[in-house]
Image (cartoon, rainbow, N blue to C red):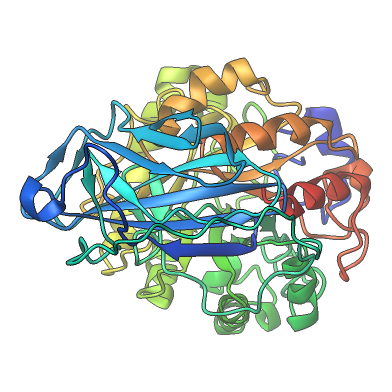
Length: 520
């Protein structure tokens, strides 16, 4: 949240209530089975049928290995151990979505307690980080519970009889790329366990930026966006290895309410947002649409404004307009799996209700909440509004205390018939939960159960020391993140990544860019 003194001193167009990933170079190979390791059995005789797809995000001195395990048989795999060998100097540093160990060249991942079973026809992805020198040759033989697996479609029919050749021992002569691969359609996303996955079942970790402007420019009569939203600006993002963009929205502008200038409202606003999303998708970038500013008079604890219209952040969305907003947005983007819906930016109902438990009850159930003078749209009603249109997009739900508190997220998780919910978490250096011990206690348990997306992160000191601690922690836990913000504001007024839309970084942005360039 913003300290009150800071909020009062901000320029009117600094709209964010908190104020304060990579298009990583991919190199991978689908796994095929070669020689049977000692003690292994062929899938055809063991009654187990499995496929493994291996991909690596490589940044020259290290990489993230993603292994998608598919049960291609007819019976569940209950309790699993995946093993394979590297032939070079690859050394395990950490893993997630499984318990990872390494002995010599042999790497083993066993199921975590929360995901012991892989059912027929389903895929589970586990990932780990490694360092290496020399050449990073992909493994070619994988065993699941001692059975050799094939590629994603199933086991091999006739294993080859010769082992792979010895890999080169000299390091590559060219430096890692500094620009991302050519753009392509952004992947459709779905929730599988505690991961976001693409249609092939590969884990997707979003690493990107917020693009502020559409939440405030329209209602302030200044335009549709703040700064350019053209191809050149997207090229600059992609040069940073950004893979996703979060776009804050204003419900009054989308719904075309009378308080918004007609030139920036209704169909004009909607088409501008849709065009920007489509351009981002054509460049391979996923999008997150966030309901940022909403209606309702609120003058209680931590109030940001006293107006009834969507001119600031309110403690919870209003039932009168937030529900129609999400019905309309869901209808517009139904079938677009590359777009995620962030149902409400930064809830802070506990500031109004006076307690954590009452705040979480208001968060989920809405209605009449103590201290809030308008009917509240709880998260359940917003989930229902989206699903009522037939849209199956992934939905992000931010916790309370400006999305920094996830302590009761799992116990208050709304019902979703499609099971496509992710937790949204915001992390700034001035938040209450701003240490690794707090993240371990409050965020890691949620990330073990559902995908977590750090929808906003940053620091208010024009530096990147906080990110230097936070980002590696997020990487270790497979959590997506989007930094605030890709706007050319004075970073002393909040965490702005750039000083020019050609991608020139601020000191804070330089730290974030370096992390993305290193592969996250």
